[in-house]
Every structure is written in C-alpha cells, then in structure tokens.
Length: 168
Image 1 (tube, rainbow, N blue to C red):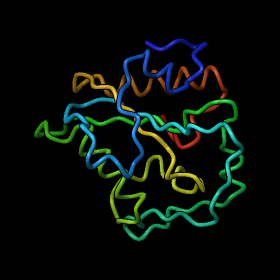
Image 2 (image 1 turned 90 degrees about the vertical axis):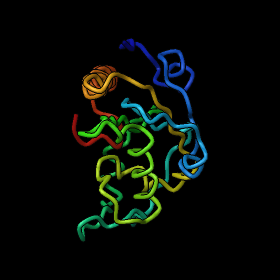
Image 3 (image 1 turned 45 degrees about the vertical axis):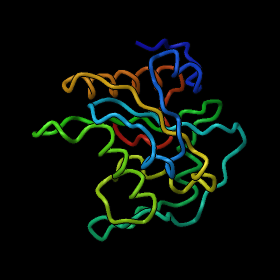
C-alpha cells in the first residue's frame, strides 16, 4: 500500500505500481488495460490553478456539471499533484475495466453526456488538457478497496480528499 508520508507525485505513484500517465486526449491510442483497477489523475504543474466559470463536460441526465469558482477554490488541495482517484470494476460481464471507464471519463470531459459524474471538477481546471491519467490493475473485487484506502491515506496526509473526489 501507499505510505501516509507519500508525496502523491507521479514518480511516487509509479513506485506504487501505477503506469500510463498519458493526457486524456491520448487515451484512445494508449494501451489501457481492460482489467479492473484504480486510476489516478495528476496535474503535473505546481502552479496555482485557474478555474473555468463553466465546465465543458457533458450534461448527464440534463444536469449541469459546473460548480462555482468559490466551491472549486475551497476544494483545491495545495502542495500535491494528485487531483482524483477512481476505480474501474469488471462489471457483471467482466468487460468494463479500466479501458472502458477511462474512455467514459474522457468522453464526459469532451462534452458527451456520459455517466462519469465522479471527478467532474477536473474539467473546470483551465489546464485540464495537461492532466495525466495513470492506472494500476487489480483483481475485480479489490479495486474499490484500493480506491478507498488511497483516498483515506490522502485524507490523512492532507485533511481532505483529493480535489475532485467528492466521496470515498
């Protein structure tokens, strides 16, 4: 597992077994596993973020994914590059996995009305096109446990969840 003292940087996540780290736009051509697992979104720059007043993400079931800039500012976690932790289960057929879930996330951010409501705050980052996605495969039943453990460890280190994790 990850260490509470972890800096949550891309190199630390690589040491913890995550790979990939590609921009969302490159996911269709990336070798994303079909297996279940956990994925992370990192913001490689350490600059103070700028937020968009409206999200470019898709409106799923007619709901606007935008939140106010003060909400985003309050949720921002300084001194870390990790902005989101998510999971991908295999589903009832075993074919959902990381590739399918990350494609849904990418398409949601591109404006499609796709059901990936979790993590939607990242799309209001003015530099969301620079964010990197990494992943780690797990056994199907372990993805949720690893996601939960990572969010808990992050919260222990930063007194709040990662920026775009609203639950967990």
